[in-house]
Length: 77
Image 1 (tube, rainbow, N blue to C red):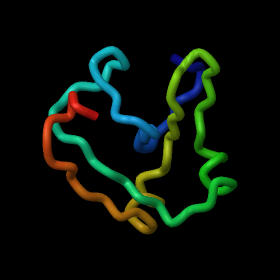
Image 2: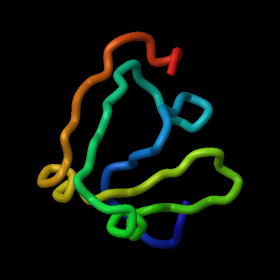
Image 3: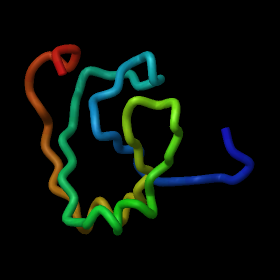
């Protein structure tokens, strides 16, 4: 989708589904100890999308994130 190769973990501010090419039945809540300014360097801004998304280095998530599985039906979120 771009001329450059990118790597990392995609995060969004809302649960995504197959309409956004996201498949699976497990929803993770990722809480990061980063400021809005620190997160802004990883944000991919696309004006037509109704949600925000970030491509965050895995090493940063491993060091700074608290991650847990959210229980219940993902389609209800």
